[in-house]
Structure formats: C-alpha cells, structure tokens
Length: 124
Image (cartoon, rainbow, N blue to C red; front, side):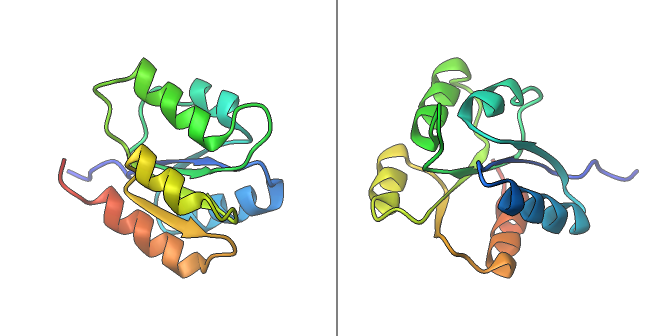
C-alpha cells in the first residue's frame, strides 16, 4: 500500500516566490496548498497539513498572528512549522513561537526542500 504524500501549506504574500516554492515541493512529491496571507491560510488548515512554511511579514494577518491563531483554534494540532523572513526579528519571533525551524530570506531552495523533507518525516 502506498502512503499518501505529506501535505505542506505555503503562506507567502509574494506571488512569484509562492509559485516557486509550490512547484519545488510538488516536484518533490508533496501535496501542496498555498495561501497569500494569514487569513487565507486559516481557511486552508483543514485537513491540518504536516508542515507549514510561513512568511513572517505579510499584510492583513502576518505570520506571527497566523501562528498564534492556529494554536488558539487547534491546540492539539502539531504541524511542523518553518518561519521565513528577511526581517531582523525573525529569530526572536521563531524562539518566542517555538517553531521547528526558521530561514532567512533570501534562502537556498535546496535548503528549504531538505528542511521540509526532514520535518515531514519526523515522528510526532
């Protein structure tokens, strides 16, 4: 029996970067959903993805607000979370939110792919 591919939710307001990440991860065999901001991402959480790659700085509902709302609405859910940002406060926010990983923009696409692979296959 073949197992279903891991699901990844990309939350990124830059449409070109969002499309690039989606293509990269789909090519790698992941089932990928995408959202342009935190509000859109909240609507894309069911079923809960295995991994969430979220930009920190977005209009309307930013990455930090999105993750706080995710944890409020789904306290038992534990998707792996990668926080991505060019902001100097990325590491502080990542520590405060206890995310699994953070990447600084611009990032190497191979590094993101490898990180998502690793997080998608982790236990619990």
